[in-house]
Image (cartoon, rainbow over all chains, first blue to last red; front, side):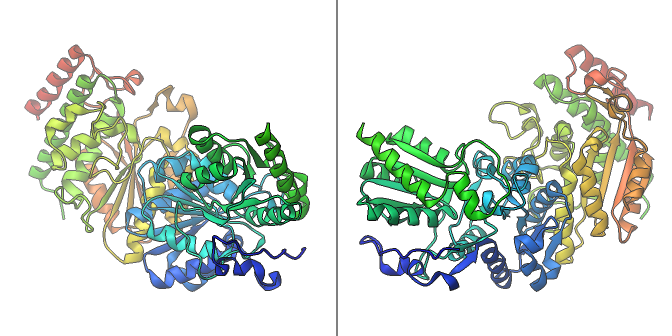
Length: 339
Length: 280
């Protein structure tokens, strides 16, 4: 892995917020699924109503950490995702706070209608935290690479959709969804990602984090693409282009104010997500822009196709989602703006 | 605790009145599921007026037993027993399926207290029942969980996932019913997609299985008592029923799965249902 380039602090945000980006990346990379596993254990210690369900992937989703700490509160449902979601709904009726986990493609695809009928429709307090989202699942290939899950969850009424960018944000997001009453979908990834947030960062559901505002264009990103967006910003900086970076970790409800402010400020938007460009972050941002503040935009993501086997770096390049691609998209959107 | 003759008589009469109310509300509404509401009426009556613990004034009372209507299209039955049990006023029954009503076409727990969970999409209720039962096991509470499934519903794969889970976690605080009326929308189940042998299947999945006449109140009540004594596994009560039970107008007629009686048909049925009491 290439070292993560340092980022200068923005005038708007205190240096502390960006500390994580400045430190050596070797010790500062955590997979968001690992952070999820740790968050569950700490939550389990604080609250005895927390129960966790998995569908035979507890080693991968890291719910195994909770299972080890609280075996009586962990329910392996076997390879039966639909049943797992229904069981989670039942546990919430019995007064528990259920977290149900499996790979994103199964949690949201295989069990979509169970999430709709048994969780969102009755508006139950069920948390679905799905791992191995996006193409960077890598070698397992397209069958396992979920590029539709954000769209599938976002369309459901009552559902909150969160895509944390790094380990610390994942920890806070899990605590936040535990406090929040209602269905939540949290998307975490398989691979280690650079730590972007320091201890002073405060995650809030529905609130975007502006790393730097930018002047020429704003990159609105989620998940591991936030790190790629920061890399892109620094590439552009060397070329005299001032691109802003916004971490839109809550995709629903989207922080429309942040999107509109960025559009008004920069007049051009690039979205970057490890998901189909249809229906996910790009779709959500486009909806806000089209209705409230139309400006040119370019969507970086998987372009209406399925994934394929490969390594993370190769895949990001293959699908046009690397930092270089984001930088090129910024230039493209700036050209659109000047027309 | 043996049920008395008087209790049985009262339960049978309650089931008759439940059927009358179901038919009245469906006729008034003009849409809804007649056949499967009537076929399950004796089961639901036994649950709400013989076995289950609940407080109609406090629908979320922690000590309550839970009922999941997995075959959510039998909503008119659920609403009627909830009215008879005091959860809602009888007058509200005539709002069925109307705009703004809490009595949605299929039960919706968002609106109507007493409905444990919204159902309507078949195959999901048993999983939910499992989750509630697991929660009570965890809390070491004695609440019981009941679920009512249709026989056509057994065609849904999730039912069998839930069947495995309930046995795996030894959910002896769970008791489910299959309303085996033998008909689904497109015709006889045996013709559309056969699900027999139902009892063998559930036994093979590790359940205690009882096979009874689902219109014999004494047998339903006895099966409910028996289910409470089963340890280490869930109980499935397979109820052999007649779709549209209560009047010759509807009995065994697949066309009354999702249609409602005309005024004339209602009149005939009400006459039959009233006569039934006179005879017994």
